[in-house]
Image (tube, rainbow, N blue to C red; front, side, top):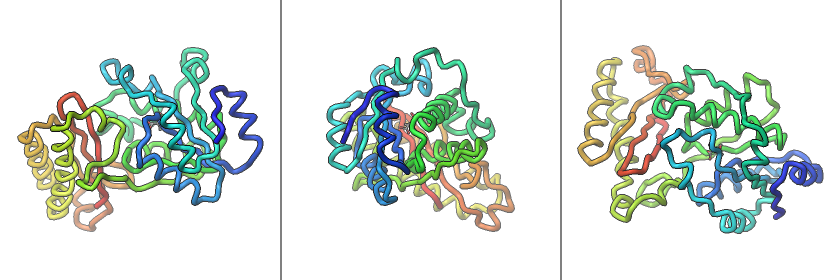
Length: 281
Ligand code: PAF
């Protein structure tokens, strides 16, 4: 695997082959990321991974400064997974000038759920992803379903800007006890790590209960109960909600009647650590 740090080296390396699959990451890799690389390889495409901790998508009181930077270990993992090229720019490469031109995602999709809890987050994500798309010009880009809202927003961005990129989604990888793999799991104390699968369990219980609701007020009551139950277990939840898969809007009475495909999404803080997860249902 070749590693490059500058845009000119990236472009030179990309020219050697065509039809690249891009796996964008912020590093501190785990088995979930390696699953994205494996999926990219299945496409028969040469694989380029990026590692860049993107300041734009972190709020002022979030974990940008302490986000783990583990480049050497990440590069070894990527090489072992069969990645062909690693692009690891520093901030001066990615943002040589202050990034005053931004991608503004639709607030109907980016202002709800995680977007409501983390104002500006998805603007930061779409801006860096659009920039990576321009730098790499991939044929495919692979994203995990763990960041369900992010995936949907990027799909919409690609559609609305008519980008010729095939967006590929990969299922969430979980630990045996159900906890979705995430770089932020590393922040958990051993006791919190034991407790952490409660978020996934809460989503499973909510998915079951919510599917029995026949009206939006009934559904809202089920969601409220799920939130309170998680709170009683010591979590500080931002949201636990059943949404339509297509646009992440609340299910209407008609949706409930016709079992429109849904997804339960949750975000909650355990101590200092904010975890997210989701489950299609
Ligand atoms: O999902 C992530 O790791 C990040 O949001 C992404 C897509 C690499 C953009 O910084």
